[in-house]
Image (tube, rainbow, N blue to C red; front, side, top):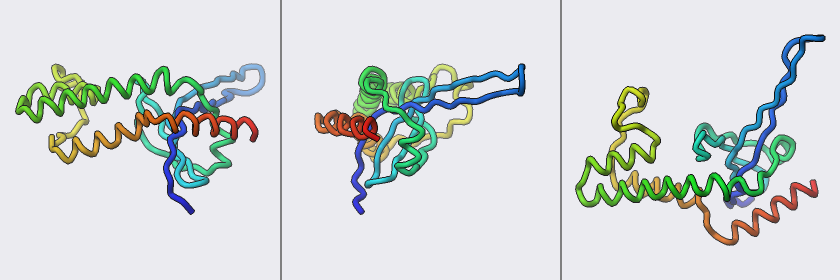
Length: 170
C-alpha cells in the first residue's frame, strides 16, 4: 500500500445537535472547516482551520468511509481564504528569516511573532507560549511545512477536481 500524500484542500463538516425535549427542544447546526490530506489510499488526515483560515490544532486520522460520510468539499474556500492566509504567513516567515540571517534579532522576533499570531508588544496576551529557539533547522522545517500546505502545483488542482468528482459519484 502506497503512503503517497495528496493535499485535497478544504472540506466542511456540519455538526447538528438537538437540545431539550418536546416543545422546548431546539436544533442547532455548526459548520467547521478542515484542511484535508489523503495518505495512501484510504486514510485521511483532517486538521481544523483556525480563525485566520490556517490549518491549526490536532490532526485526526479517519477512514475513507467516515470521511465521505462526514465531510463536504468546499470548492473555492482553499483558493479564496486558506491559500492567501498561507501566503501571508509565508511572507512573514521569509521576512523573519531574512532578518535573522542579517543578525537583526529584534526584527526577526517581531516577524516570527507575527507569523505565530502573537503580539510582541503585549506579552501577557501570549501566556502559555513557551520559548522557541530560533535556529536554521527550525526555519527549514517550517519552510517545508509551508510548501506542503501551499502546494501551488497545477497538478493539485487537477487531482482536486478528480477527488470532488469521486465524492459526487459516491
